[in-house]
Length: 241
Image (cartoon, rainbow, N blue to C red):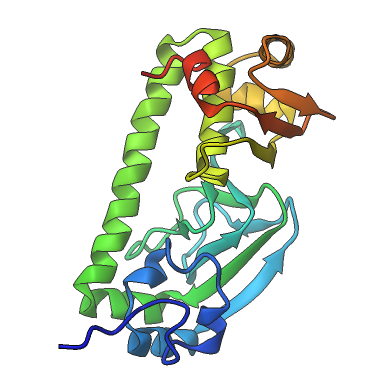
């Protein structure tokens, strides 16, 4: 029996999907060409400027999105107005929680991003009819749960140096998960945001960045542009097995 290839070279896949670099790793990778064709009727691809809010905590959910490029910052706001960064999402992550009526978090573009937004109604209808799509979304939720548990360990037990190294290792793993060579990226958060994310002061973050640079674990330019010469050394500095 012939097997239908669900990749960017399949002529049955919509043109807009064939041109999408993030499709294979995202939820769309679980769809057949026919499902992609149906979904494409309800999607809008757009660029969002850094600092723009995608949806706010407590707002009604009307759309979901696949992140195609860039980084999204997730924050939780307390009743007194204080807020905490609780996560970052990268391409090709799925942004949103299906079958909920109200967003529990605020999602903001930490960098300029590209997203493929889709109607809540259309996608939820497809999820009900596609066990493979439902499984893909379920897998992402479990991955986020694992990441959250790892982050609890980072915040609760690690030293300041290990916290900063863990943060950089987390970014490297999401920017270039397959690389075993040199990895380069721009840090998507300000020093203040990094400090809040890690439960440290700005001064401590700066000192540990300098320490990692002096030890040759990282190279950093202008506080944002980071080069990781050896991922294993960074993992070691982060206290990872």
